[in-house]
Image (cartoon, rainbow, N blue to C red; front, side):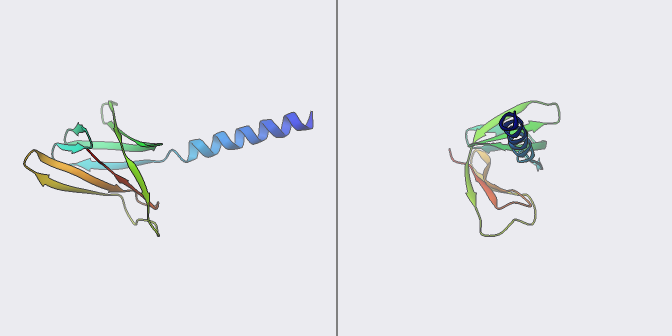
Length: 109
């Protein structure tokens, strides 16, 4: 019985950690922008990282998923910042630094 209780407590603790790690970040896109192979309309988004995917949720609850490469910096980023470049096809998001973490999301094509 002790083993079963210990297992249950461990399972609940792990579930709590995985939920806690699913932090979201608020970003604003000022102009239509391409993030990897997906197009994001201007507006406010909530961003979550799940494995190798960035999930953007707009104000209406619509979810858009883009593959990302997650890089880790030596120190935590002070704030969430979107780095983009202007191309002939419009804005292209290169990366997003996630404030309060060491993670930077790199978007490819």
